[in-house]
Image (tube, rainbow, N blue to C red):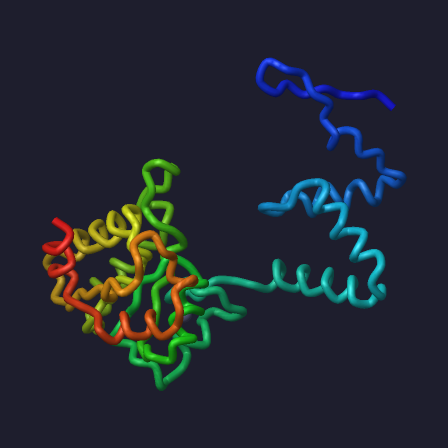
Length: 227
Ligand SMILES: [Zn+2]
């Protein structure tokens, strides 16, 4: 076995991860794959794989099959871009939901957080992220175009609610969409800022989030309060 070194500052230290001497190629492959996940290093990856090997075989098979089914069959709602299994998601298909109110969110975790509050009966539009010049994310990489097209074409929506997290990227995204809707007759509101600046919606407690949706304010008022 050879020892590989890594540069660390001006010192050379032994790279212990490189010293992992796998007894099986199958084990090494599995650890390499699982350690691609965010926050999972090789050491944690090895611990997880050994756990999977220790548990009954059928449980690991179930995990493997559910992941295969997920990636093979999951898709995005053609209307709101929520994750679903058919052309339209259950929220868009539900006749009891008010299709005249659209809540704009960053991703599916925000849909789940708002649904948990039980305070919202409209539909959603999932952007898939926020405009972030620092991370190289522009409007064209998000589902903003389809939203603008939908609002211009159908003209049946009464209200658009911005529910992005109150960060600089969230504010930039709200303002970009707001400018794109110039000339379209539609009420634009934003959830009230009971949500602390920098907090993501999914981490906000459901009472606070529910209240901030019910007590939403005209978007133009929020512009005045931040300028
Ligand atoms: Zn949908």
